[in-house]
Length: 512
Image: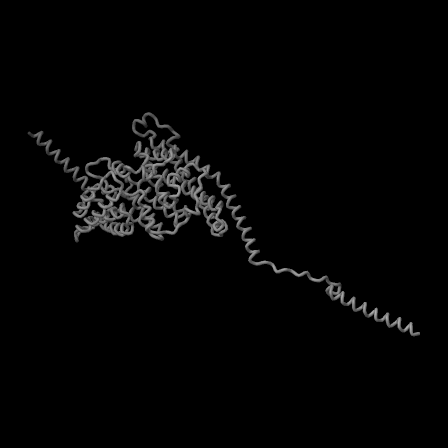
């Protein structure tokens, strides 16, 4: 009986240990991504969450018209993460921003068409900036509407928390996991969960429990595209978590992203929150997803001219400190794709505006100002993307310079598949970079020619607006400075005097 009793006891201890371990994870860090997304029944929680998030996303990200080039690159990025098939493609396209470009104001040609053009350099496709505006007026409602087609956070899976949290999770469990979060039925479930959470919230809660509750509320507002409310709740949750001595990575991320929805967002502040979220949960498997979500919203704010290329580089800098693993490879290749998208858009802005057949646009000084700014952006993006490619190549170079030995491979230190994929993508993007670089002279010549055209136009306009007065030819002057007419009159007078004198002289002669 003793062995049986011992076995039962050990089993009980093991069960308690597992339960305590899971509970302690949630209790010690109530506002981290892991505490929200690691369900007790799933060991490999990151894969499970991402798989659920990207299920059926192919229509959102590709519109059903993704080119082989885009699909291939999406699959490559997905395979860095370990996905295969459609899951790899969808995850990779999410990182590339294949759907968010169209949502960001360039729906004329579609997100994947632009992405295809950006990753193949060609100038045969030209966005008509006279129709699809290069810079549009910011409107919160328009941004929110566009966000429905952007990457977002998944619904939580861990159901451990205060009673209000658990009640809300029970409601969320009724949502169809195969439907996207933008689905009307899913949004209805989310609204019901918000009502349940707020109505069952105890008046008295510890700071840790309150942070758990408000982080969930912020998340639910976030996925229902109410970013003003999401920011407010996340900010409160962040404060409660810090007061409880806990990490607040999820509220920090929600604040960072929601700040981009303000008319004039404090972008540097948003980066500080994003950096906190990343560095304080360094083993977060969802970090690539966080970058994709943040970058989607960033790309939209390029459309109203609020963000510029320097802001993309600031965001890229945050990825440098991430451990060199499959997460970093997916993040940095995804960031590089955004550089090329911005390069393509700057190129197209120059070509479209300088070739416009609309005289109002072509003759406006504001158009010249816009194309000069676009050329400046183009050159900055070239410089920054070259530096990024070089930095990433430097990370991988030592790995490929000395092939691993058999002993290294046995210990698991051989070259990984994601490293091979990363290197292949860098090679492809390096070649693409040279094509954009070679196109700089043509763009500069185009801008110079356009500037000359407008300078000549300005000269003609000035001449028409300020015509020179008709000049009367001044009479020729004598050496004494008299005019020709005066000189002639004097000559005639002199002739008359002489004639009169001669007449009188002849008369006297005749009288004698």
